Image (cartoon, rainbow, N blue to C red):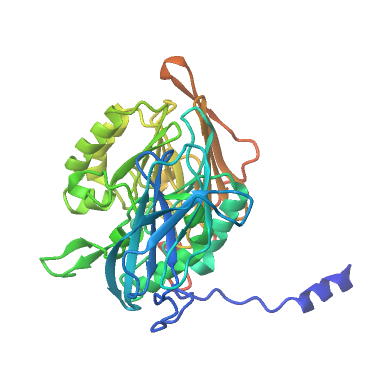
Length: 449
Ligand SMILES: [Fe+2]
């Protein structure tokens, strides 16, 4: 036994002190993520009715203008037949990695619950054939993934969360992201986006990606002057092919779609808080939810209504948008921004359930208030969420990056639309707290950066 212990010690390298890691794997100045004639950054997103269509965005270098997307019914043979071509619209972007062309193709007229293959064109090259199933009718079961902020070190640390999620829920059709996909603002924005796509890879191509925009997808103009203001980052409008049916005050950053019995409304929290659009978005949300005939409703936004982090309070969201959420009895509010985990409801009511979670490695600390008003809570933990939904039940699971169950409950829906929440304690690991006094850079208000 003793010999074995010594053997193990000898076999293990000495334990390194935690050092601050760079935000990207590529060094500053690297052109590793420059656009080429070969298509990359391919991401599918839902159309308003994803049972009949979806949209795809991708990137090439400047040699490609208005390329094609090809789509056909998936078959077991590599001889793909019945190909339909869709012409893309192209936008230009100039970044630290040079010039790139960003393409968007909208596909409609598809059959519900059918498996299709699609590929996108570059200059003398095509992408892989990707498989994507259109959504089914509202009474069919649906699996969704939900990720909190990814933001930093997307290849180094986020990619394993994405892989773990795909292994846990290979049947997921939709991937919701709570915003702050990248950190930005460091003259490496484009490389960060390159890493986000490297991390999400097949997930972005073969599930419908529905992101909320975070504050880090905006940048500060005239910083530290009286004219300081938030401006939408240039990547957002060209990176995702979103439905474009949002509030006119937040046109490219709010939207909604129906997904197999779930109405998903995505709100731009940064615009609401910093650009004065809370009221306009609340009126839009009210309209979107008033017309909802789906059995379930999800609202996705970056900044939480109830913040689990010390010293954060999003008053405009609470005052202006929260009454709409309550009035329409939204089932789930999926949020990020605070780099911790916390769930709460409103008293004993079954819904809404407000969730804050984090996928990426940046980890904050919980406030004392969060520890008394939220249950469960968590620090120092990378997580993903799996939602399994049919007309009678919505099952929610938060899992850690190693696959362990962190939080779980089920909403049951009865005739007349009444709902009951059943908490599942069994199988959950104990709530996790930060055990470090400070980060590698010496910050005591964070747990890991
Ligand atoms: Fe944020």
